Structures are given as structure tokens and as C-alpha cells.
Length: 248
Picture (cartoon, rainbow, N blue to C red):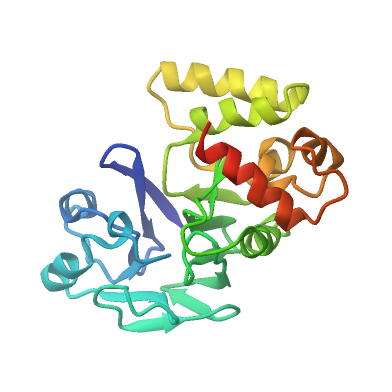
């Protein structure tokens, strides 16, 4: 499966997936970059993770231009042009590849992710970022923690194909939570070099997120102690860590 990262807007990534017998665009904000990247190929599907405009802005234009169909969360009526709704545990078939749908609310009430287990790709929208997670616009810390636990349980070699290049700022905050995390310190240094060179940091390995992303580590004493919540439920800790990140 060929996966192309397409930068758009200020810091968004949309993704073009080519399985060899079908092509899908994940969370297209703008139509022109998708049409250019297609290079004459037919677009079969748009895969939406949630309704925000910077993930769905090109839905209707691409549908009209290419005749593609649109799949998105079944419980969220705000997906423009949605043809197929999917829910937790459903599968979605893109040509020869099959994705499991994960219901991962917290950022929005209907957020989903697509996990292509055979190729190890996770398209998670704004639920999980490299070094961070999405803001709790329509959910609670407990809901986001449950969502991140689903993702955390995936294989370590999963490629986290998230929707924003937020890594450098996320890791600056992460260091304020766990300044003595040697793996995090080394990763932050590497990210600084990559960004100074104009290179992307996405996708990233889930196994590295286990070690460096404070939002996946809210069950650990080191993160709980950093926010004065030792022994508290992980969802409550996540809500506090997110609150601090929002004002960092």
C-alpha cells in the first residue's frame, strides 16, 4: 500500500492511499493538492475521521469532480457528503486493503480512526499527534483516555499518520512534564534537527509514543506526580495534562 503525505494549509497533513486497485484520500481540506497528487488516477474514496473543516473542506468538490464516495463516522451527521457511515469495530475495505474502524471520541464526539493492520498504518486524525493529543472540544479527559488506550494497544510498529505537524511544540510541553525522560530528551533533539532542516516528523512509530508522549503515559507515576495527581484515575490526569498544554 502506497501512502503519500500531502502538506496543506499551515500545518495540516492529508493522506493519499493507493492500494494498487483503489485510491483513497484521508481528511482532505483542499481539493487542488489531491487532484495534483492523483496524477490522473481515479479517486475512489474519501476517508474522514471527523467533521472539522480542515479535514472535510474538499469533500463536496472532490465528490463532484471525481465521483468518489465518502466514508465517515456514522454517529456524526456533520460530515459533508457522507455516503457510508462506520462505527467502532466495523471494517472498511479500500481495494485489497481492509481497515478496522476505531471509535476514538474526545476531540469531537464522533471521531474515528482507520487502522490498516496488514500494512501497519493508523490514520487517527486529531485524536493522537506525535507527542500530543487533540484538544477536548467535545469530550472529557476520561473519553480521550479510553480512546488513547485503544490506540496504545495497537502493535508498536504501527505508523501513526496523524493530521498535523505539531511535534516540536508538543515535545516542548512534554519536556515540562517529564524533563528527566532520556528517551524524550533525545527524541526532542532529533525533532529539532528535522524541523530546522524543513523535514516532517510524521508519521511516527507508536512504540516511540509509548515512551515519549505524556498523553499516552497518564497511568504512570512519573506523569501523575508531575501534575500533583499521584494515584488518580488516568482520565482525570489526562484532563489536567491537557489543561496545562492548552495554556502552555
